[in-house]
Image (cartoon, rainbow, N blue to C red; front, side, top):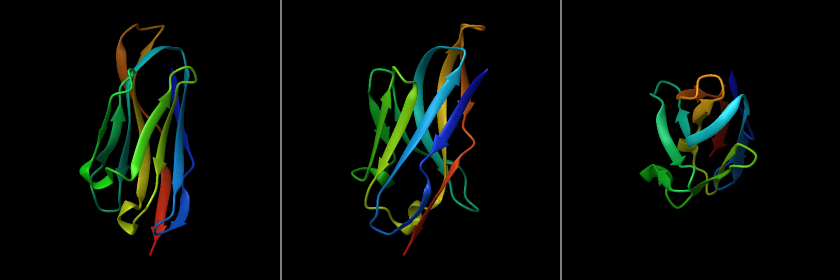
Length: 121
């Protein structure tokens, strides 16, 4: 089994910064793409950013230039550095990972439980 645990969310004023972390644990053989998604109240979950095992990144237009995704492959940990936060960034942020386990030796998709980010105006 695989667990993804997010941390680092909280309440911040507009213009402020936060750093989210997501630690993957369990019977992990390898991790392919990792990503951050978010869901605001009454809205669908949307992509924020993704990063491949080789470090290639992709960002939603709404966060380009403000958010930076990174990962530590040795620690199986994903990060999201967020600066210049806006009230519209308020959402629950979810970690996602494509993980190959020792038991199945095939990739499956896993989600974390989410962490709340609230940006006040």
